[in-house]
Image (cartoon, rainbow, N blue to C red):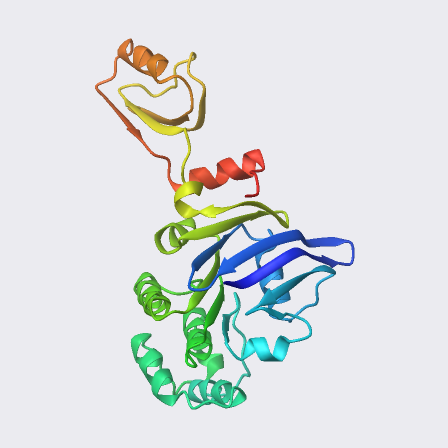
Length: 293
């Protein structure tokens, strides 16, 4: 069953592009990644799905319900973390968390306390005294305290230190194991590769790839590092070249026999051939434009 499904979803801000004819589906129970740099259309997609802005054309459903006409019914089972968290100045953290629960007409006090303890969040402070990271923690508690069926997370780790990022993803994995669907929007590719089973790549408002993270990571190109030389031989076609005084590293997509023959003629003392990381694969999709699947 699809928890999120869009058909030709389009949003323009006047003449400015938001997203264009987005066809996307997220299945129940998935840990789904939504990848793209700032300005690609990730936040526009999320805000449209949540009814914060209205689509220009196309349609979308969450839980099988229309995002425009049935918005109120949909939102009760969603936990949303915006990329930038803003709250009423002067309010204490505990009051904001309590207000969020009351708006949902749900007693979330026990779960809120557990989340605050795990995130080391001081609920006695006023929000205008908080750092960016602690404001993000408040938004996490508000989004997750009612144990939503669907978590929509827009760049959720910005501002969190590495230890809190780990704790946050531990919490998400627990929710996912309990049956929640996770929709994670991020430009931090390591987060997607480590946590998501399937992902979509968006470029300039258009979907350019949609597949399992494993398949998206597959490429015939290899990362080659030659130790003992610091330039790429002229007869090898290379991309993403990195060099220092004693070695050169590059992406190679040519004939492996030519590579080995060339390497054998060079004064190298070692050579490594590895799979490229997801960052390099992502740039490959952006350079080529990709293909929607």
